[in-house]
Image 1: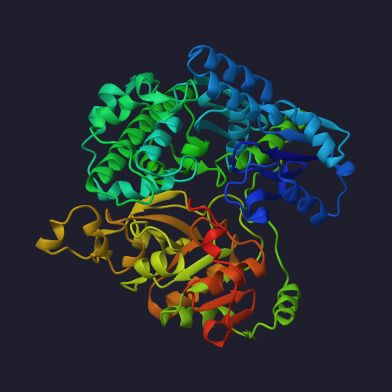
Image 2 (image 1 turned 30 degrees about the horizontal axis):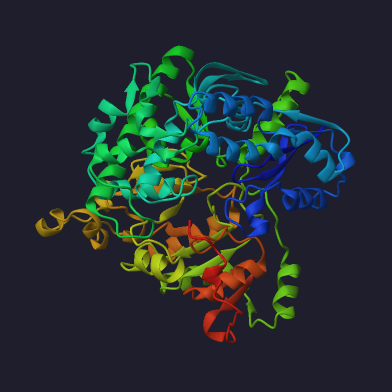
Length: 597
């Protein structure tokens, strides 16, 4: 049985192929269109899936859409009715935005020529299915937390073999995802894009406003259930993320995007991060007690908050935590397809597996043909991993392009930019000369899976870069008395460990553990770097510049390489050196191509 899953018409649209319960392919439309968070119908992703597997649309048994548009429309109508007539202008915009979704069956049939069954899946069931079915557990609790689906914003339940059921839920307008997004907006970042910036900014501040938030904006019960005080939020009537009362409570207006960040903004970030963790930990304790399950699966956009994930693990409420690597809306394409497969297949659940490398790949011959066609100077390496390790230990910053593209928001070693974590200036270099992004943003480490406990207060696996853990005490460098008095962004340039490029100001890091079975070439590279330097860690950041989707093709990779301060580009077995390249000219400034995220 082949089922195509589709996520579209909000943000991060994607298509996925599930065959007999196995996830064979998945890709986000943004990687093809080069428009970050592209919400449009994933035509190119779908066409690639069909071409990759030599399928016609008639070879597909069903197409599953990741939410129910009729129920969502009803929520939109009901929500605006409560604020009528003041929200009439916003109502017309919201109604227009629902037109494609309302007719999604007709749209899919007309766009693809598909004549078979087109199924809807409740949004949070898509999230839950994406979390539980690929997990390694026969039974587990699941928790899904996001902005909003149709009505649901938080759900939990239990998965058991092929069965999945939601036990309890919290509904719109009460939403931890929308609460966090409101603070994202208040801090001057983009909603559905900048939440990870708010999370990264939090360690520079103190949570001095956490109690103010809990006292005024949020009523949290002992079981973790909550209600928002809608005096401070505009999402019920579509009037915007925050009201005037929100800014009045904090005594400062919203920060204008791209203006200076102050200590106030850092303290606000620390405060909402603390509140989010407080609520999630309460919910998780309740889920553990209510279900009695030993393991927990997470999905929904809030599951991408890897700092909170790390706190959940360290609380010890569950034996193991498994997080869907594409926890946001893109992952709903996988979840929707899996949900309908298991509804049809009954108790027959295939061996669970989640390989995040589900996108397009380019063979060595295709890459070499591209290099020759473009007259790009290159050489083929006979000892790629060792030579790359030597380049990195000598200060090179390398664009690393290999194998199938990752699915989800993280670059996990196939479309990555790599650097030496021991270099004191690496974070600054990568932020300003490579990524062209804000200087405060931290970088993540990749580390050999069997060496992670030697460096971090963490035991286990984190293959999807979704868990933050503290660096071990013996790897830290004590601050001087003067350094310990620094506040805010002043903390940025202090050397805090033997691997300063990946050590955040609170001595934490967002881990990706690398195993030989999941990514053998990346594992060999780390082994070579470890043998050469005694350090089993590299800096890993996504292969793109600010505002650009992660690169998909060799041409995307070469273009990004030439636009930035990367010194080398590795495409499969081929090494491209910046100093050997001809002058790179474009008809217009590439910064005009990508809207800042």
